[in-house]
Image 1 (tube, rainbow, N blue to C red):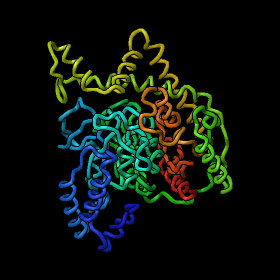
Image 2 (cartoon, helix red, strand yellow):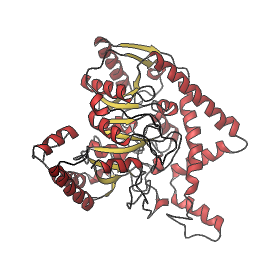
Image 3 (cartoon, one colour):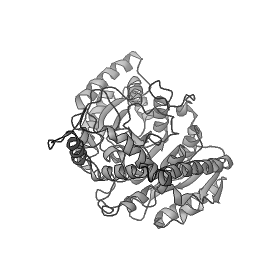
Image 4 (cartoon, rainbow, N blue to C red):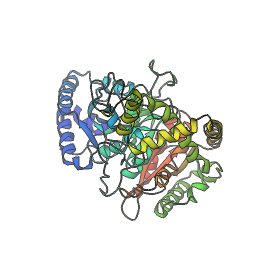
Length: 475
């Protein structure tokens, strides 16, 4: 069976009787089996996907199939799918099954998408390499000695290696955009509140967004269109109308005014190939009539500290619910209630998750709350205001998605700070709550994918998707 690069091509062949959903599902199941060494999927729903495909084939014959008929999807193991296991790639949720569908999942199912499996990820979405999973590390299909990025590495690799057409991940500080860059695909984080978080396991609630992986902009657009919008189960979700993203994107947008932050190109640790790639892209944009200007952003050095103070604080609060009392793993080494709590969390949680919980508990403690957490909230506001001010003068902010291409597995094991630097360019959009996307932009001298990131203003996803579609034509 031929490899399909977009839902539009699939729908065309479905319409002409050249393929069926059943054939598509069997093709993806074969692909999952042949690429299982990449460890991108924790669980495959083979029988369920085959049965759903047969049902949708009948609906296609009757002419009443949904907008996503023919789309085979995988989902990150942090999003609730009713009556399916959900573990956040952690031992502490051993045996737990979701009791309801997350809103994004329900919307996919309502439009006849087929969910074929759940993806491996960094435990509780905490990581930049997908090495922090109770189910083992995920390998990058471009080079299996290298990481796929994180925390949504399994979702990225599933799309990269052709195990599905689209995958849902979550993005707190770059967990969709960074693995998209490392794997050479498209990864989008929408405006905070654009997609309901109902059914998404919380890491840092004021940052968390469901994001989308695909190989092209049109599949991101139609998926975003389907899963966005108001939701009675999420008080933080936006009630702003959802545009018809899939029909409003184009490949030739009007000439744009684009900013890039000078400090990002002078940052210590920026890979020279990525810098050259970025400068080449700037030249192409200018020659095509766009205005591209360097701007100062003196708050750049404060982004990572602010991000990690706030997200670890929220993680400390959110993860207190995983205690062995109500569900999941419970330590057998218990002599008292206090011992049960301590041993369950010590045994059930991984090293990185425990590190972030302890950091967050520290910054929330009475002695340090004002010095760290309260001050970080104020700096976050300054970063958002400064970024919004830039976007009032420019259509987009352009920057590399990552300072390096995919690094070797185990390369940063002994240095957590080096791992955190992988988020250097992605946390700005997260702190500001703005939509951002990573699109492929060639390769480095080792043949590893390079990603370019575009940030737009609140709820300007149509403009962002259209410009990103154009960027992909520049090569």
